[in-house]
Length: 248
Image (cartoon, rainbow, N blue to C red; front, side, top):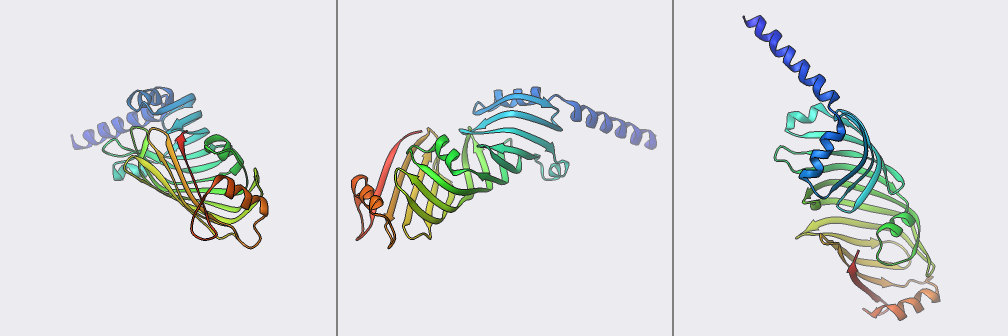
């Protein structure tokens, strides 16, 4: 009887594994869309074990195509987790995403190589032409109603610069990402000749506020200084404050 019970348990486990491996991803993601209104997906193929989606949008961020593969080891921690490999904002994206034992959605160890010009075109409320290379690192991200309730990460912008409406060399720029009280915040700093420091805040309702302190350096062009004098407010001696707010 004991041996028969073991065979029965093994048979059930095998059936569940086969069922899980072949369950259509389109049905599973359709259920998730109903449960989480902020999640949008298009053109889904494969199974919930391994598949692909052409386009996915969460919290206003769009990616695709994205491939996923299930990580059985995460079940030991009470998590349904996947390895992701795809593209976001025309750049490579890799990392992990899943659902915790309480039903909360999360992502971790996300890395994406971004093109500054594409990022600015897609999300910046202020029009300018950016140059250089960006790398996004998301250490941890927790979603609540489609918006990050917890966020820890950074954006590294190397050889950072602006070529329009003015020419500006910013050196290496770091944007530290965090979340608090229904908003995402980013603390900016750099090591260029022209110094930039300040904060960017985006709320769950897609409102934004930018507050930057710009200090021209020894080689800052006269056109940059004229721009700051025209559009900025006088700050500490030799500095200008740029403040803007609105809706994305």
